[in-house]
Image 1 (tube, rainbow, N blue to C red):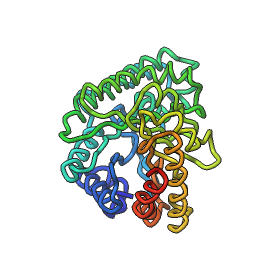
Image 2 (image 1 turned 90 degrees about the vertical axis):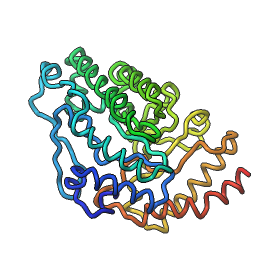
Image 3 (image 1 turned 180 degrees about the vertical axis):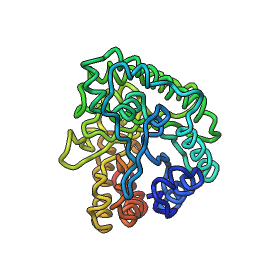
Image 4 (image 1 turned 120 degrees about the vertical axis):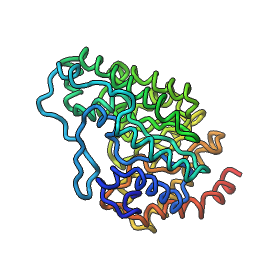
Length: 334
């Protein structure tokens, strides 16, 4: 939607630091956002490892993985870039411009985690099969993606004056993809240094997972992010319920979620506004029951669909929050 606000196609938008910065600033101002995670497409970290991105009209930019990948390729083709690669440098540059333009709004730079980066370079199916066929080769490659993600934080984003923090995307911490033990061994094992890099760089650590059955215990209870955004997909996956999430996870972490991304194109604005009002009521009652007052945000845990998303439905979320939020909080919580 930020791309559409500046009238650019995905490829033009993605190559222009100025357009990406302006589009994100426009979104914040138009919808009165309380904070921002600026994102053009997810594959920038993988792109610095050689992923080739294809742009198709109306579609999110995608990487189509190689079809002839071998165990040896993990060592030969997964090569840590020198310094900060061109693709992540673009993200650093437009993030810096955004922070300069809207210093009053907390901005959290987006970066893919080590396992997400590897799957976006090699292909998720290929990597998951190789966890069984060539686990040592995968682990050696993971050490390289871990090294690069840490470097991007410590030597790149840490130099953006005024940046509030980092938003780490590790969507494979998801029981629909692998079990917790396997994720600990191949994914979570390589994230501790990333979290440490945020602390070392004086950047707040936040976490995003748009998987259908997220591993909340690992990514919230153990990693302890300041905020955690998650996806909600109606009848799909192990969908979290608001009272349960608030009771279990909101002592230290701000939860962000519960709007199904599909609602941004299949709802009318009046339906969206009504839906958000109902979510607000459920959240506030649950917060009161658990003696919390400000540990949950109404949020879409995934991108607004790029072709069919309706501007009016984004506005309806903001309108509902501004119209009902403060009064409902006073009435329910006091």
